[in-house]
Image 1: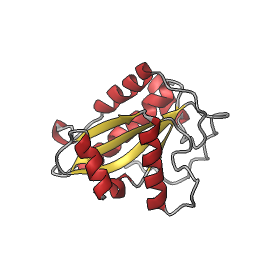
Image 2 (image 1 turned 45 degrees about the vertical axis):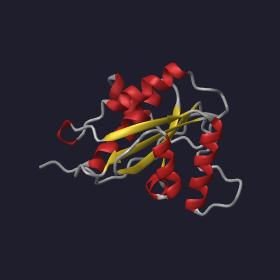
Image 3 (image 1 turned 120 degrees about the horizontal axis):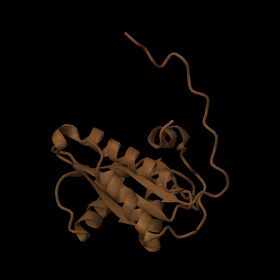
Length: 174
């Protein structure tokens, strides 16, 4: 089995991270991999915001918690120290698919570098809010972007979870 297929079959969503800081060099590698995701007509409609500032990360987590309706104190980012926000340009007909492919590339890249990751939803709602729009504007991001997801990354706490058995009758050959 080659390294790419091995990473695909071994990658798992991690929901328990330790506080160890992720080196910037690894974050840069993961983000770069995300920029190579396939996109409709090669338009590259998705953008990535790398959040490593704890105060901003915690604010995003709290917004996500409120949107998700969880009790106070719950961290929907599971303690991950890094959040890679993926948004995509809504003017492109393939924007959701483009952003989803970026999310997949980010998670595979993180796994290949010994890090855990998890796709956290509710970015759409977060960046439709006035607070989310103001955050984008503060970064100089203009345009009509939709939040696709938050890719949280970090060093996982504990062992890598085992794969769930694959369901049968999901593949058909003609």
